[in-house]
Amino acid sequence: MSLSVRALAATDTMPFIKAQWRFYKNDPNFVTPLLMDRQKLLNMRKNPFYKHSDMQLFLAERDGNVVGRIAAIVNDNHNQTHHDTLGFFGFFECEDRQETADALFAAASEWLRKKGKTDMRGPVNPSMNDETGLFVGGDDGPPVILMTYNPPYYENLILRSGFGVVKNLHAYFLDAADWMSDKLARLANVITQRNHITFRSVDLKSKNGFRRDVAILKDIYNRAWEPNWGFVKMTDEEFDFLAADLKQVADPEYAIIMEIKGVPAGFVLALPDINQALIHNKSGGIIGGVWHLLTKRKSINRLRIIVLGVLPEFQKTGADAALYYEIGRRAYPKGIRTAEASWILEDNVMMIRGLTQTMKARHYRTYRLYQKSL
Image 1 (cartoon, rainbow, N blue to C red):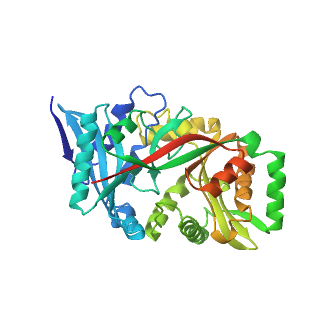
Image 2: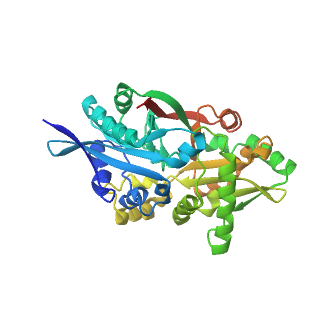
């Protein structure tokens, strides 16, 4: 039995996408991605991420059968921001055989070395602004929307290929009983009144209003997250590309701009966990996906809080707690009973303290990034 790894043409993404299916055939927690979304993410001509980045897809095959895949990624904006010579790997899937993992990482390493990179970090799919990290432990169950999922043996494959752990990412579980408690309601009310805080939904209907609010979100996102490890500002095109996608699925009740004395000071974006419906869409087709979303919408009772940020000058006001309460206040009448706040850097002390002490959230899942020298 001979093992080979071959590079795919930039336009030959479908074999790479569909290769993922074979590793989860009997896994009840696997949520099949929508093929259309994966194609859009990997489209190097249309996704603006690739205007400053490059990527090479690889498939591992044994006797004509796909046994693994990996992407090697160069993110020039990351390296310019952090003064690195770093390459990345992503979209890693592999059978439980070390020789296959080693061959995949060797192919990615060789491609990155030719690009002048000295280290490799991952998994990122394809950047820290997308699905990030390897799921390494915590509560069982399907992943929440836009979070990663993988077999537990993947970590051993990565570590045995010479990687070390570089950062942990945490996911926190919020229960409505704590999230919507009278105590938190009183605290949020005090914070809101003391700081003259008001909330409004992002305008998803008016073209001019949406453009205005996207500019506000972009400014807050790039300023509030700038100090974070591994953060890279999104370009205008990247942010607009993401915003156009979110506009199709976002509920304006869960996209909230916070103002303090009339000045934009923070925002929160949350999405209903449509994975609770899409887990039944085994083919990944758009028609089946729409059908399951329409017929199972009322059964969705979980929210993912994707981003919640406050500008540095307002971060000591307690405004984050007010934002968390506001999203809960809006979500609870719609049947939302739990939420996941993710992902959060393991050393983001301020955010973790607010979640665990104020919101009574529980650290319930961990995701991990790895790095090695090339």
